[in-house]
Length: 128
View 1 (tube, rainbow, N blue to C red):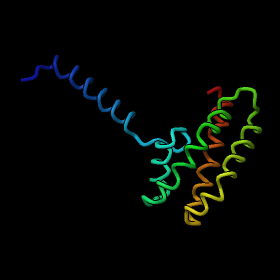
View 2 (view 1 turned 135 degrees about the vertical axis):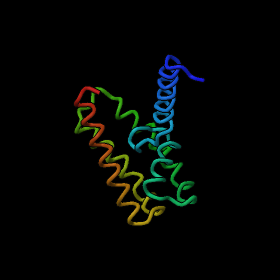
View 3 (view 1 turned 135 degrees about the horizontal axis):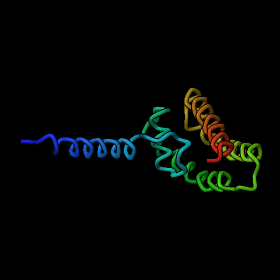
């Protein structure tokens, strides 16, 4: 039988465990990670990719990842320059992605990427 003194710590412990599980297991947005597998998983859910599309996209994301990370972490680049360079990387992979994705999926990917660029710039401007 639980006493009132035991219920409070148990409730706090349960709440903390639930919060931890939520934070670690919640799906990430595509722009929040440069890990190709995690990014592919997030994009897969948003774009409703087939298993074949996932296999075809992974090498492209692996190729883009280090380049995107280098641009995002370069403190000497002004935000507009970063945006241009990120767009250039996306434009390099565009022909290959257009062959893999349906027109609707590709259009949605472009919107996701544009939103990710804007979020990254806003985050940097806010001091993050």
